[in-house]
Amino acid sequence: MRIDTTRRERFLGARRDRNLCVLEGLHAVKHAHRFGAVFGEVVTRDPEAQIELAHNLAPDIADWLAAAAVCVGPDGFDQLAPLAHPTGVMAVAERRAHEAEQILRATGGPVVFLEEPVHLGNVGAAIRVVAAAGGGALLTSGRHDPWSPESLRAAAGLHFAVPVARVEALGAYGDRFVALDADAPDLREVALPERPILAFGSERQGLSSEIMDRAAVRASLPMREGVSSLNLATAVAAVLYTLRATSER
Ligand SMILES: C[S@@+](CC[C@H](N)C(=O)[O-])C[C@H]1O[C@@H](n2cnc3c(N)ncnc32)[C@H](O)[C@@H]1O
Image (tube, rainbow, N blue to C red; front, side, top):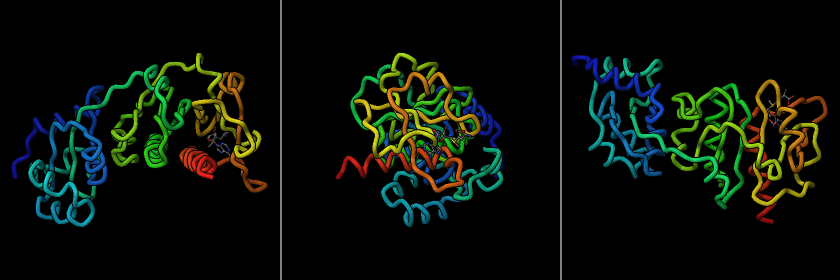
């Protein structure tokens, strides 16, 4: 099959486009479709294999995928991303734009704020657990784009299930901050503010002194003696499920 260079440019260009996002793999495409993403283009390496996989893993999207996906062949598919996904499906979709102010006014599950995260895999894994555990939104600060293809891949496309946005500063909301820090009192014994914003620090530095000082409360997940900290995304998961278990009691 002849390689379509304009398609390749569209897919590679979408990785840098602030209005678009690239979904890599069946699970990412499945979640995006389930949560109402607007797709520009869906491609497959092999339509028959794709339909069989969808029938096995995501039967609810199998018919839609069969109709929407264009076959680009193995060579064409491998050219559309730096690391072609083994499930053989990829798509370009429109990003959802969210205003931080609107997110913070909304009522719903706790908002998770990641301060200057470094690893996009952690950002994606955190988005995935916010969506799964009923969190209200995921906000990040710092230079990394939470809608990057690496983050979408790790989140399995769940950016469409909860609001995800990068913010400049959240200083005005200090009275809602819960600063998660390994040296703080036990989360289960701390009284949380109304509509908490759960603030997590970066992988290497932890939370800045600015957030630690402004936070309404500080809280930790107790750990065995000798362990310094949990991985960032693991900490987000443990905090959300601890709060969920506590509120269900
Ligand atoms: C990998 S840790 C950062 C470790 C960093 N060296 C430090 O000194 O804080 C990333 C973030 O996960 C959260 N975290 C990790 N372990 C935690 C725990 N046991 N209790 C509460 N939060 C934790 C914190 O928000 C922390 O800033």
